Amino acid sequence: MGWLWAIIVGLVLGVIARAILPGKQNIPLWLTVVFGILGGILGNAVAGWLGVRDTKGIDWTRHVLQLIGAIAVVGVGDMLWQAIRGNRGDRQRT
Image (cartoon, rainbow, N blue to C red):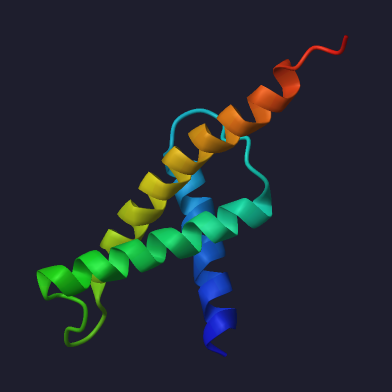
């Protein structure tokens, strides 16, 4: 059940991150989920380092850090995806 939650949370974080970032991100949905999962993991790590990973009630600080992580990962990941995909498209056939 842990993997299912990771995929669901990754999808939600990735889609919200794409909505927050300006412009259009040309990454597929599966990559949005992967980037959302990675952003969530990054946010959890930062929350642990700050000592706010587990608090009483809803962990708003952890959730905000997960979203910030997802925004960062989606932003960087989109640039990398475009660089990789752009290089393939720039090859000239001779």
